[in-house]
Length: 375
Ligand SMILES: *Cc1c(COP(=O)(O)O)cnc(C)c1O
Image (cartoon, rainbow, N blue to C red):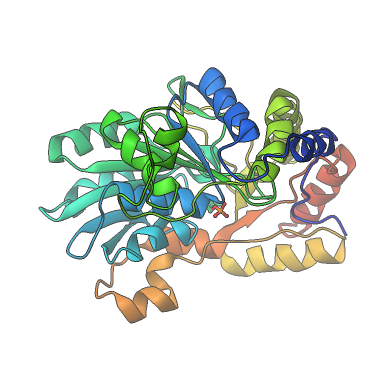
């Protein structure tokens, strides 16, 4: 069985892991963390960034940083991972879900403005499959209405909007290094703080509500409990694994882009783009080859594809049950929005096996299997 995901390791992880243990600094905010943060700053211009234990942690920090709380509204696409909404719901903010675009699973930028009220605190932008949302539009709206923009860039490492790295455009950006992402360390994340007003407090929230980071930078003579927060930081052991992946980023990306193009070309050559929709990359977005998904004309054909692929030894998966129909949302929130596109993607989207062990032969078999559904 070719699985849907298989975490890639460069081989350097074990070397860095050893170095980390030898150094004696295995807790967070040590040399390995600093080397990773340095890398993010040099390669993507993320000058203020903090490694976290997960993408969810980064989103939770973002919710605390912008002060989301009871009485606030936060606009979130319905077609996303739970954490995009959970982090803000946990602070008792009211979640206002919006729909996806009809041509892409990403959020419908034109649906945002009508949901902005005097209570709106933030817009959570999710770059689905690492494909940029139209950030100029969103930032203009946010500036006009004075609301925060949190980029959930969990899938978007290395991707850009009009040449600008995703995660660097909103007031804060959140990345994930979960094993299903382009680069990973098992579980991990990154908070990028782009708004200078939030930088000092971010470091405090990160280190259990203490000014410990400042103390180690020599900016405070002692450290103590000064604010809320949690132990959001990544251990240096985990950072040592991430550093290996960061060093191999260009090679990993080249491999992923190659596979993405193989799928795309094979579907087009088979004439399947007449029956299914292939991923759309708008002209302002780059492709970081986070995943390869296709959209079927109906749920029944999508489900048939899953079972046929399984019979042929390929695990393809759907994901994202529209959050506005989730058990938790229905039990805890009052809005009952009608979001047909979100439901559409829940029912018709399929993600294909995407990792370094998927070869041209597999791609061809997968495409032939899907083709047989339309004969
Ligand atoms: C993976 C993901 C997350 C959560 O990241 P974790 O590191 O698993 O906590 C959040 N949002 C989106 C869109 C994701 O894909």
